[in-house]
Image 1 (tube, chains in turn green, orange):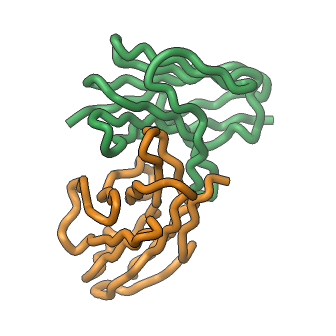
Image 2: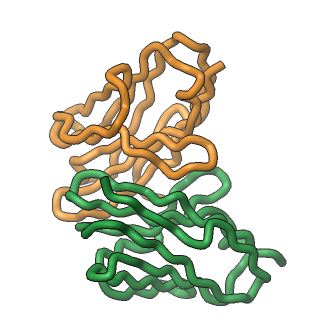
Length: 108
Length: 112
């Protein structure tokens, strides 16, 4: 089956810093999403981005489907950005396969 | 707020018991899927229902079963609970014309 890798596995930032999270996947996909999981377990939709670039406030994402990777950019990080960021891909239009996540800690 | 609601939020069971988890999908969404998230890992796909029929299943044994009702709400049933079934169970819904998933807040199951 499809493999999803995320890097880095852990990231510690000072408030105000910028960061880039990467997601690599081993096969072509129909759908790709980025989620933020808060400390209570809620998966919050950040981007639905099978291809192209999107921006939402301090966050933006780019997916290069032909090269099988996606990037999530966080600018001017805040303590509330802390949590785990998951990339999930859907190769057949049926179910999503999640990566192992990037655990982000933003320090005040 | 995704419009996907799950119940109960927390529950404790003992090994060998059975559990039923419930999910109400977002209005207009006819596809519901369930995921299991063990501590420190990413969610893993259990199965998906579309128009009351199971149309996809991950690598989970038959003691994991489900239902989808005409109003598109869904249940996840797990029989003969094992200690390793302790996890966060997440329900997600999506509409016919979109691939985007929306998750509920999850049901945290502890098996003792």
